[in-house]
Image 1 (tube, rainbow, N blue to C red):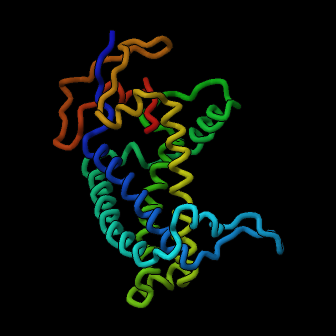
Image 2: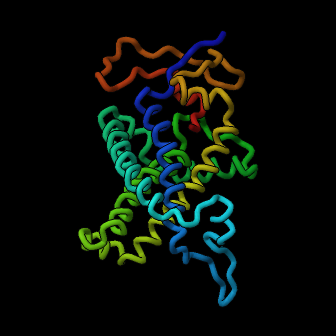
Length: 253
């Protein structure tokens, strides 16, 4: 017998899907800006292992000579990114969602177990919880990276007006490198995140769109799904616990 269970609140879904195109535009416009001066590369002695990015990359994407356009897009969407991030963080604290996102003392151990299982080195699947240790560390790190992107962005956008911030981050060159490194981190997170969502299946993706997931009441190998306690008082921002909040199914998106 199948049933519908609530998984992601509407606000979380809105913040998630709004942030995706914002980050895409920010990275794209950042490349337009980065083209004007792109010194970063990985070297061993005099040998260059990797260049971020070769001139052919910019020509392929038709990026060269679009610095002013990139700055205009970047600075407009910077405000949208900041506002969306502040609303998201505020909501997580007001609603209590932060309890599911902040790593605890067991998160790193759980993250190792999940990683070993995903790589095939561990045969036993870790227990199903709303967000496992790896997810908590990843999602919490993304929030910290967002703060870092805003601070480093202001440090290189207004190095004179925010000279104290630029000095705190190690100077203009250091702040620019930190801003670039955070962008690379977003890209890496995106590929890992999409891979995990694909691995979790269509129903997991659908739940981030509709907020609900259709599951069997008693799936093979899973604990019995029980009804929440209707007598338990629920605050205005605290959603009623559904079976998805119990350790019965994974949530990877």
